[in-house]
Each structure stands twice: as C-alpha cells, then as structure tokens.
Image (cartoon, rainbow, N blue to C red):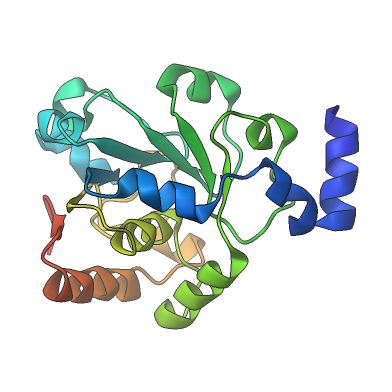
Length: 208
C-alpha cells in the first residue's frame, strides 16, 4: 500500500480504515497487566532531576512526541511505547526504537502511512479522548491521555516523571501555556485526584 492510497482511504473511510492497522486496546491493557509503568513527560524541569535510573527500572516506559533524552541521568535511555498526537520524524522513531506507536489524538488526518504501518501501532478511541476533554473542560494533552490509559489498566505501579503542568514549559517546543489549547490547572487537578484515589500513581519531582 502506497502513501497516496493510504491518505485517500484515511479521508474517505476514517477509523473504519485505520482500525485494520491498530492492535486492540485489550492487547495493550494485557501488556500493562502487573507491570511497573513510567510515563515520561517533556517538562524542561526534568533535566534538573536525577530520575533516569528509576525510569529505566520500570517494565514499560512510555514517552511522547519527540521524546527528548538530554541525558541518561535525568531521562533514562529506554523507550517501550511512544505516544503521539502529531507526526514525528522517522529518525526519532528509529533512535528510540519503541515496540509500539500509540496515536492518542482525536484528529486522524495527521496519521501517516509510515506510522500506521509500523509494528505495534495503536489507534486510541475517539470516545476516550472525548471523555477526557469533558472531564478537563479542554482538549487533553497527549500526556494526560497516556496517564489516563495507564490508570485504566491493571499495572502494578504507575510512575509519572517530567510533568509539572507546563510550569517550566516543554523540551519539545517553545510555546507558552497561552499558546496551546490545554488547561494545565485542570490536568494538575486530574492527576492530584487520581493519586488520592489510586495509590499506584506517583508523581515524581512535582512543581507546586
């Protein structure tokens, strides 16, 4: 299948077409069952912390977008899954070598053939995105979607690194909070409530 044929069918048939490339959510959840999970955000503040060894010690390490790795001491080196809300360069995927690519965004028009045809591709349901948007009152970040996905699993532990809810901005871009459509106060409250109700969830290096 060439990229042009893929793009046309993605537009004409939507999720009905894309689902044939996706592993099931049941399979994804089974892989998390009983595992320790690290969800690694792209907050700049993580570069000043020394969580690399703790990140790499987890069974499944989920990063997102460009997944910057400025140092092994702060960020670790391993990537099991890469969560996406936008296309990233193939060189990044090659370097990180994730076992799965997870498309978490509701919009499908940016799903490229090279992403969907990669081994382990997963297409997150639009309905789950809608539920998170309703909870937050704003479009969710990819990080919030990944945290929620992990929390819905039977993982044994869920460690969150590199999340300060945009207090230090992002390593993967230069935009400020006013330039993105997310509600970071709502996402912080979501994570705070999650930790209060679920002892598996631990936020490391939180900025108050």
